[in-house]
Length: 456
Image 1 (cartoon, rainbow, N blue to C red):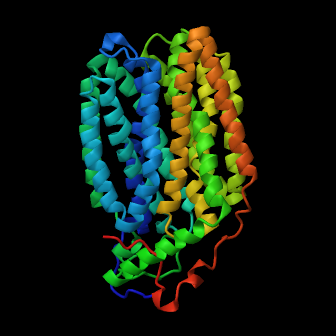
Image 2 (cartoon, rainbow, N blue to C red):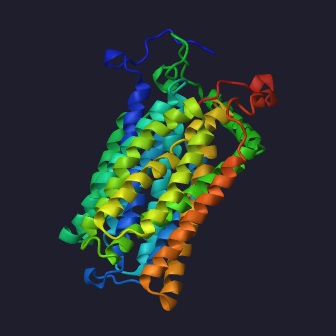
Image 3 (cartoon, rainbow, N blue to C red):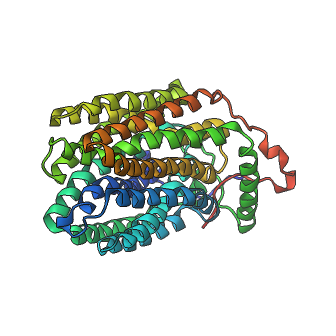
């Protein structure tokens, strides 16, 4: 590996630039998460005729499910694009799309508008913001990746906690149009400003990843080396696809997200139906409690995964998600919904924050964009199936039962999703060693180079 003798960029107080990357991507998390969390907020207003919509709940559920389905298709693609072109270009695209899509969402008047803007445009936006940008973090750390990931996702939890009640109250106070146009302008501007900070890899700044050998610096790659890295990434992904975790992890993520996706979408309409809350803004505080508590597990789960085992953390998270739904079935008063949100939030926060950690445990320092993208595809496909299926079940059950029984039936489906995810976790192999340590030996010596993301 080449060393760089010229000075590299340094921050005050000896802070490594990797932590500034974590800060910037935490902001991306807040706005990227806001797209997913807007789904739960939108069900009630879109099915309310007084706000100018009054659409069928099954149609709204199908539109949200289409969003997740589009995201599932796009996740491996945006992961690949991130490996090929780098995080900064992905950030630029996501910022511009966020601005355009949120503003258009504020203008929708027909169901097909909703399918195009939310179901396609915002799905692509979310995929660009969440897949390649989150995957790039692993390249900035040799040590303490769990802490970096924990901080990253905890920040997203803070954003989600604030987003639910603020947007719910804003829709009721200022209307649908003003709320989403304002959010688009704010989010697009903030994301664009982060281009000042975000870089693709430590070598772009003459740095080595955090925790590397003291004084070791990776030189900025030449165009030829960047091309070789792209070829190496193809070979790496070919070897990864031969391993069992590559297929099991998306299944686990899919069933886990299906389990909590049902709750995130339908808990607010259920709480309003039960009479626990009399407004969307008040009901939105359930998601606030859920998100605030999830910050604890978002922060600690990646750290504990490194210390005590990622499979154990995944198993615990899905167990909590499944068991707490039994409590929700009998919730009537606001306090009961808050208790549910607090405990469920622990499982929810831990379910999806350890995948970058387990990827590094299984696959070492390879380019993780495509790997993480496939896992995100599984997660979003789980959301899509859960949302569309439960929307259809609600419409069907409402023909034969009252609305309360219909909600209980889809909550049973949520529990079953978690149980299937637990089965796949038990099938995962040990994470104590890299499972493809010799993949580079398949590349001829003249093609080998440091495996880094050297995109511009």
